[in-house]
Length: 147
Image 1 (cartoon, rainbow, N blue to C red):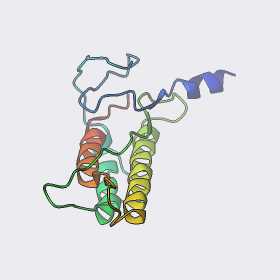
Image 2: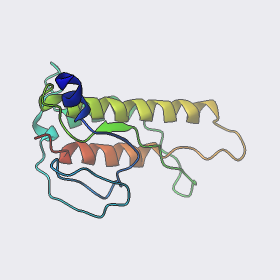
Image 3: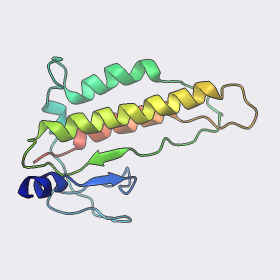
């Protein structure tokens, strides 16, 4: 049971964190919070598995081929926030939240791209903004504090 509680200490949120707001790992984020904390760029220094790339580098390498830029005046909608880990589990160490978040961001991007392709050319369809999503998530990966 102790292992379960440690794993549950990895707080999983779905869209509750404002992209402009970052939280200390000692605080639980809550919807509408306006706490702004400074972060050490921990994920920027963590290698993604055995790739030789940092987590943010790996994310960009995987995400850029999926980017679907649209003309400047195109109305776009944001991609839904995936479930991310804001706190590290004592059992998993610091690398798992970074890798999990990068993979979750990539999965959301992939689903949005698939939806855009499926509805391409349909009148009234508002495509997902893949370019902004990639830029924002890369920046967030650079800012996630894991300890």
